[in-house]
Image (cartoon, rainbow, N blue to C red; front, side, top):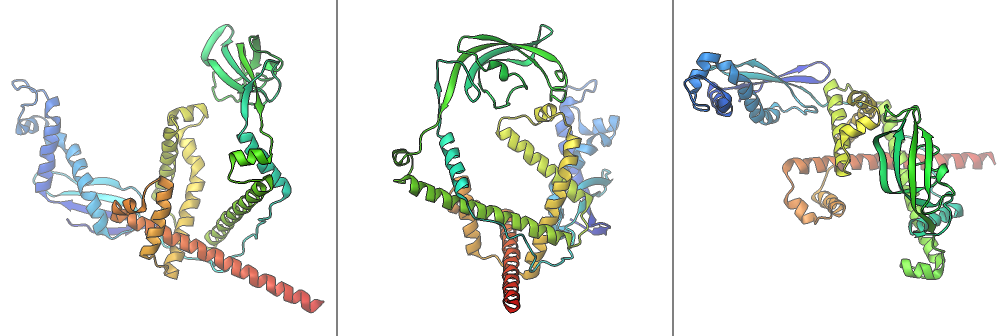
Length: 443
């Protein structure tokens, strides 16, 4: 395979791939076999028309598209490798020549990884951050934990704000039922603001067995445009009223539900966890701040194709995540009143930021020459194994060359982040020491 590369402006390149006529002939024959059962010619049974007869009547061009797609699908991965380029986008394919008995020639226009001119990245100043935990924060955390372990208990009284009612309801507008306006056995926490404004308020004071006619007006900006701004009536039956029973914090409760013996031991452990959580948050904020400053002080020319590829990757990830939760991506677009184009526009700034951050960190890792040892890879696989509930040995056994390469790149990026933050902390210490020395001289 002959793979010349022509580099273009703004970090794009055109790969030209030439494939011999014999490969085109094989692909044409495959295309014929794929299509022959759909072709009717008088005098021949369906699927029995010779290829030469079809080409004589309709021309060989009718097999060109399928043949070209098949050749490009098979040959592009090798062309990618042979080009020696760091490609960061999907290829834009164009057929240059396709004719029986001649070479098949096509081009792949791709974006290549742009070079980065790094700005200052050593000793970047970052916000120190507060990792202290107050007694109030500990008490609030205790309250949240108790709330999580609370139980709902059915009560024989009128519902109040904070209670949960179980209801059946049927909604209508001008006497006509509408889609999504009915449900049975629906739990509703009064005061949560889950339902349309005004709905929950009208159920305060209701008891189990009551029938309540709830009158509401849909907000003007309601996601379902056909309901926005309209008045509706919901015939509602209250099945039950439940209240939240929050456990009391006692030594006995702690002994029954945790590994600790006393409330004080439990609170101390909780405080330590809160401190660690704050440290992690401060660390992430410092990383983001440092990387943003380095990006702003660095220069790189991002190809349009690279940006669009990142945008599509983020949207595909979003759609995949929704699918795992049982949500349909198209339904999400409908109910949020947006379009795919608007969503692409919304994620584009974040996509650009991610690209720049990644390029800067990779450039720092390369410049500093961070090496990745086998022990580093094993440690990363151990962490991945914990995350996915798998053994590190099994992950390593099934690791492809490409996957291992990506893991090593990720490790190098992590080392670059550690390097940046360590330098920032070192500079902060020197700055504090200098300020202390200056204050001492003035005294």
